[in-house]
Image 1 (cartoon, each protein chain N blue to C red):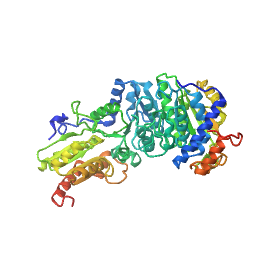
Image 2: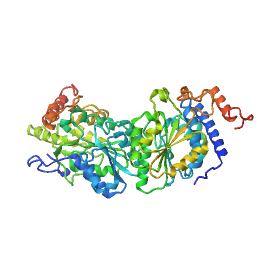
Image 3: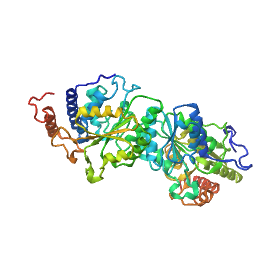
Image 4: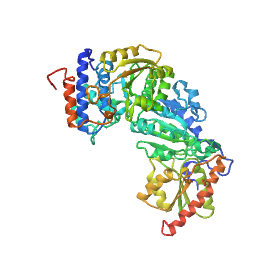
Length: 335
Length: 285
């Protein structure tokens, strides 16, 4: 059942879905951060409208910096501004930033330990018709392996705003991942959000599987939990919005209660959320794990839903993965 | 604030002492770059002992001039200069590149905040300096931002992105130095990836360009003063330098870009520096 303490949109399955792109949350959060603190500045690499940096630019034109199509410059200029004392947010498509500028982020942001906030927009396969070049599916992996870096992947536009606002004041290098498509809004103003604290979205007595999800696919995870419930299979759904630092306590608690986990993300199954979950559980409480995500493959042009269908990231795929993980419990555990 | 040295001869003597310390540091480290640090000793001496407003007693003084070193591999000359200026204890000199030392093989801001930034991977320093200068101008700060770059790192796209950005934004509070020594690891710059006409390139990107003899301390100081008077553009000072300057067997030889002297070579190098290449007979520490 939906967790009451999470104050989610109660009738999200019944009524027509209210959908909004998570990048709108970025734009709104950026404005809120700018209103709260004059040190907040926004930089963009020639994608001001589509990254929603335009919301900030309209409100605070004097604190907006146009960088042009130069993602390495985007993050290095921001590193200099942060060293001075500003709180810079940089935005581009995730395929380009961090995609094209990993070393600058590693050296000038993370090793310098300056609070640059990197917003990777249009992340995941659901960017759709633009095709494989624009579908960032490796960015969580490349960002979370860098020391000092915080990695956040909000599940909807409401959480996107909260994440952006909180990241402005965490004092750390931070990567925020956003998507292009309008996706269901699940959380409300009352839903708790704290960097590094997973939100239990769905829980049932005697769960047999814990679904650990990040980003807009949290909705598919909830739909899957509901379907599993119809087949009398109890589940937990954790919204792991912060991939680094990972909420190990919540993860282990879920793994212990359910005895099997499924990770769900719009990212390669190698190195992303699934990797982070496996790394943590293998050291603390190993249980069978199945991975829902991009199967070590590039994407292609298509409509977002067609692509999620083709590459196996829909609710039915999560249901199948859950059943597989549960089945593995009763063989030798890892059979 | 740090008292500036105006006497050119005194500055030249300081540069010589700094070169000697570079040799001692590299010998103790057993690895590192020789040519670049020796070639830029005069520029660093001029910056720390005459040009910049700064205070070793208060390294993060809000109104200090900022110096970014983009080509992090020549950092031994900066460490040696900062030892002379009082930022770093002399006892640390021989810890360069050793486990636990603040004197990392390439500079790290987290370990020594007065370094302003972390560098080593080339081509990213000017962009950080430009971002810093941009932010400082937003707040109407009066200090200046300096950035030392190598000629080799002008191969990098990130550097030219920053040249575009600073030109567009007319960052007149930013002054860049180019260590134009014509060598990089694989050989001579004009063979690896020709940079000339370098002056025309910067002019086309809306920079003010000056050329100086990078070993003439008076010229270094004058050029920076000239740059202060340029209000409409950032200024780049192309410092024509001799890599390995002051040690004859290191001068102008790409072989010495990335290696340290062995004990005999260090002894000979120190002898040459102390006697100014045989010009003076007595050899004083």
